[in-house]
Image (cartoon, rainbow, N blue to C red; front, side, top):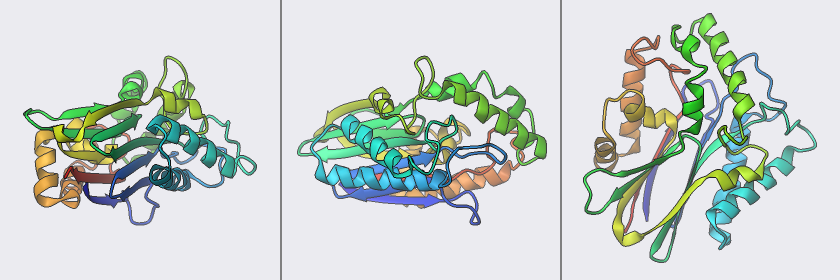
Length: 274
């Protein structure tokens, strides 16, 4: 596999809560779920620490373990939880969490895992439209709670308060049956991930996108998934992120595209299957 990637924080004065890493045969992307100002998390380390720690654990395990991606993610969650179990309240409903996308080539097959709302796009040979894999359970539940937030200008104080209320309401549904699942402190979340295996000779390329990068397609509707793949193939991941930033800056108050964050951390990886 030939891998290129780019990642950019929403603001240069805040840590990037996304994580991306790759080896010649594996790629891991995590998108940490930010904690709004005024919300408690029970953790002294923070979301960026969680994403980097779990992500580093996963990419290391992918190079050393023959286990399934589900098994590797479950063990990674256990390991990361153990590192702050005695200093933080890992059972707090706001304990740091992250989406996960994992891709691994083993011989002539490609294994994938997607947990929560980051996106995996597979360019399947012989088809016009790519295969798009994302877990939309969080988004479906979120529709119940985001009306007040979406009606307010992004960045305003009342929007910040509405975002906090939205995030705290969503916590009641996190990692529960009938809710949505995300990597945090419960290794059973790994069993809820979307997984699959495909022959490598059926896949031309793949893209891993945090929701800060996928919003060009799935929130802003300024490109199709095919067009996003074309940008990645021709101009690279940084070019895709630039398009996202151009769109965000054209609508800073969120009037055209209501959203929780006016700007978001954005990460994109493009993999040619060779």
